[in-house]
Image (cartoon, rainbow, N blue to C red; front, side):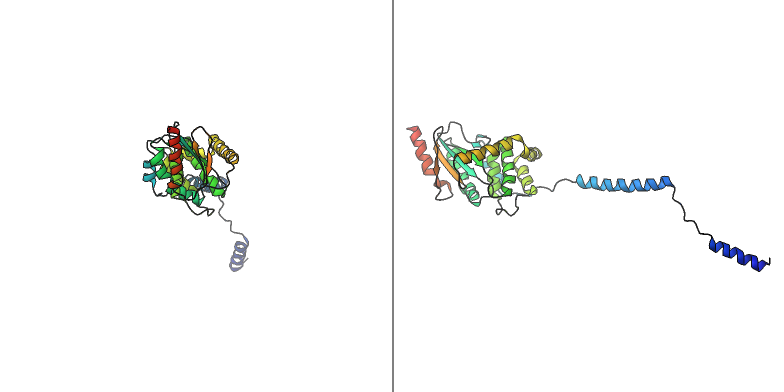
Length: 253
């Protein structure tokens, strides 16, 4: 075979022989795959470990805190146990009229009648306006476990949104908790506590017993005696102040 023929045959064989791609060792391939999985898991962990958004600033925190300093409070009851007059109030956290009552009437009633020992206030929370009502109510009733119910209610109403617009967000509730409690995370957790569920149920039964048909619903009477429903002609302290004074005078006479 001539030299030219031999070169031609060798070139043909070279073209026919496939070029092997570099092989990745099996162990290295497994290591790369594991690294990808772990990286994904790490990203997921970092995402889940991110802290909740910081609470937003609420209006009137200092005013509300100052208003209740030194006033006896236990659960949903405000004032001295031996106060001669008792007022029962039914509220829904979303009710705009409840908000007006809480902002206009309660600060003056606390100053003029509760703090001096004339009036005792019992509040029952309801949740018939919509889903936001129950979400807010659970935080209020959790605050009752810490004896901060009245601060929580007034602060909520000073920062109340329009009913059934989704304003009771988790961030909003965190803002309330951080404004009220020395242990806000525990307060947020207590929304699911047995005591909270028990209070919600007890307030529902009380409303059924008192035949509550709207909010705010007010009942007044001598402490320990029968209470009478008060039709509110206005949503400020003067709606009930004359009756409080008259009942207190009757007890004192």
